[in-house]
Length: 231
Ligand code: B12
Image 1 (cartoon, rainbow, N blue to C red):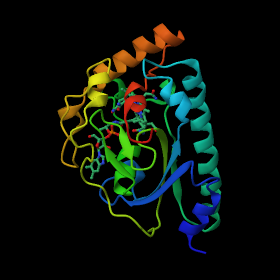
Image 2: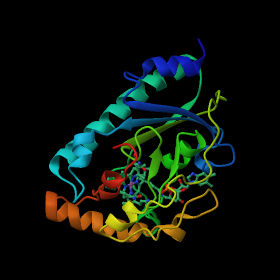
Image 3: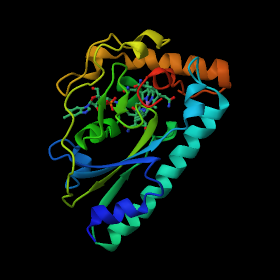
């Protein structure tokens, strides 16, 4: 069985997960050099919980966020084991980073050295929405992502998505409490700063997390909740 097929078998439930393979040659940071191919997994978020955060985050969402990260990491570790048995060198890019894992530059740029969303568009799984969320056809933005970089070419069944499919919808832009999006449609040539203010988003996420959860973290999710795709 091909490695792609063996990875599919590891995913517990097709209704809950998206799987894609991306060619990221010339797109990964120097630090990941030689690992130019990528396995991207999206885990669907619970619809009831996502519907419940249209006005801001709650404790169910907080718990679900951690549980989803845990499940994605668990599945990724099974895949890593399979890859290592095939002598394929691999690097896991975790779903998120804890504050203590962030480098000094992060707070100045709000940018990590690897974008799961970029990997997901290159894998042909979806596009970037008007408030900078990755939007898939199947689950909309209601998912969390994890990526595994490998040094082994993969078989790509889908072509990369290079432009937004949001059309004239502006719901996430209107509902964002930070007014972080300006409504411009994304394509691969458009930089985040041209359509989305990540600093305003983070500030509002922290205000809402403090007020509604009494926690010093950056949770919100209103843009994910209001998107009509995947509801
Ligand atoms: C830093 C960070 C933040 C920052 C900055 C957010 C931002 N939009 O940049 C803050 C703290 C504000 C934040 C907030 C949130 N975050 Co956050 N965050 C991250 C993190 C750790 C890094 C993102 C990053 O480096 N951004 C830098 C910019 C440049 O890259 P980008 O945003 O990923 O997207 C650009 C590229 O992908 C590019 N692109 C896409 N395809 C292609 C193809 C080519 C060829 C090229 C050249 C470029 C390109 O287009 C995008 C716009 O320019 C990621 C995890 C990760 N490692 O990816 C999670 C992540 C983006 N966050 C996530 C979530 C869910 C949230 C929140 C909803 C909070 C919450 N959990 O309740 C909010 C919503 C933010 C929003 N609307 O975007 C999810 C998004 C899921 C989704 N459906 O999109 C991620 C992917 C975590 C995960 N594992 O699922 N986050």
